[in-house]
Image (cartoon, rainbow, N blue to C red; front, top):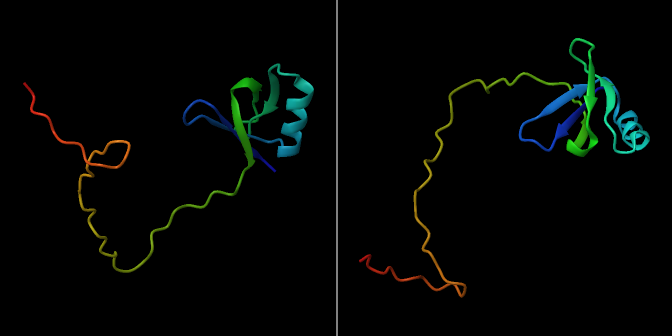
Length: 99
């Protein structure tokens, strides 16, 4: 079963052919050094630096999003209400004139 590896950098992910158990074994046997896995797309090798990995999960089959049929629902528009700025005791702060 393929596995998705998520890295600490924002929005960085790679899908590999190895299952999650094999990924765990690779981490253990690498002793913190980069190791090689097989990418699912194109069957190419991917070298993974363990210090940059956040977590990994089993890949789920991806389903195409299909919007519901029928009339779209009317959604409520969010009300824009500003919350008062308070001090540490929850009391509203007074505005001081700028001068």
